[in-house]
Amino acid sequence: MFEDNEVFGSDFEDTIPVGTTFANTPCLSEQELSFIKEVLASDDPTLSVLALQKIESQTAFLASVQARVTAHLDATQGGTLNGPATAKQRGTAHQVAMARRRSQNASLAYVRRMRFLIADLPYLFSRYQHGDFSEKLIMAILAPLEDMSRAERREFDRFFAKAPAMFDTASVSEARDLSQKAVDKVRGENRDEDIERKAKHRGVSFFKGKDCVKLNASLPIEVGIAVEASLEHEAQQLKKAGDERSISQLKADLLVSRLTGHPSDKPLPIKLHVNLVMTDMALLMDGNEPATIPGYGTVPAHYARRLVEAYDEIDDCSPISELDLLRRRIRVFPTIRRLYTMPGGQDLVAMDSKERLFKGSLRKLLQLRDPYCRTPYCNNKPRHADHVHQHSKGGKTSCSNGCMKCEFCNLAKEAPGWTEEVVREYPHKIKIHPPGEVTYESSPPPIIGLARIDKLLSEQIDGRKKNSQNVRIIRIFPEAS
Image (cartoon, rainbow, N blue to C red):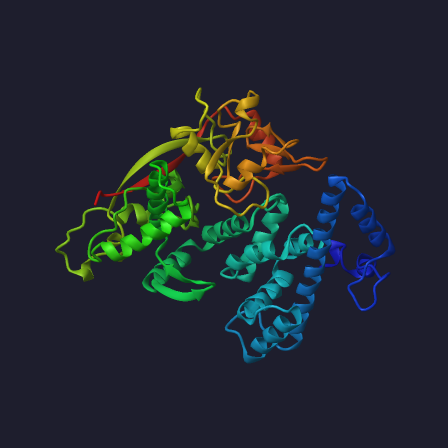
């Protein structure tokens, strides 16, 4: 199956260096050793960054070899791709975990995923072999695909081959969400049942941490997002009022206060909204395009419609058996705002402002367009609306010159020699120039669909002022407590 990828086969021996200068250690060729010595003897930061990139690619390649060996071991020991794990497969997973010096708790998932990665996703695996993706990113992509059939995974792989930039610069969270979006598109109703089943098994657990006690709660999606937003909002308000505690400390203290100070039979004191982004076709005409809950990720269209439809007339005197469990989580009423996308229906139309700060609708638009920190591979939550080209240097406060960043990345770009620029407005793309000669490009995922097919971009850009398409944002407001 993989002969066409031109990675294994006759080139396999040439890819792994055979020369070494260290006994009984992973091999380094004389050329590689010379390069590393040159890097360590040089003060050039660009050379160091290039070395790190090369080492990371080599690490990813070796991890792909581990994946191939793992799949081979499982197959020779009688492991199967489908159905429940057998005793033999569990034994194989334990062997693999010990050989890789990893915990046993995720070893079975690793073995199963490597099996279908090799068998069903040849293009994704070829990118892994070429060092394009780390093991963490590969595992994030594969996790949702477990719910697909083999035929559906192969179809996903063919789509990825047509849109090869889909996971470029993606963080682990973004990659997992994109993969989940693909699953929701083809198996939305099945996942709708999974979400409801998970909600029925909601629970709380306490366990010992290092010098602390940790609280872990499994909540329905919309409840968890609303609780997080509520704690964040109130903590920010207290911080602005002069509270000396950190935001993290405030949220922890607020959580304890609410757990111990509010009657359990009263609605949660939630005053914020849960955003739900979906197309008009998915909302009104039973389309299957997955919806998005900012702060969580994608949910099936069918489940999103239920969120909108379920929160209507509720009689508190009704027997519990007659109430939809979904309605009883948070009391809300929906309002709908229409947004526009450029032709092709994947990216939001821009807007700008004369103010210095990103506020109001402009900030909300950036949050919808950039659900992840725009620094490549960053997995932190994007809380800062940032100027790509700094306002102090003449940058405009506009959608095209704005992007969402986490606090750390927002501060990092102020380092001497660090510059960023907008290279394309539709779909939005920025180029990041850290000190030195290495550059990175960053584009947000499309608000609709899984990826942008490159050959369609020119058509979209040329026609962006024609026939704007609709996407709906449903803002689900809880009632005041």
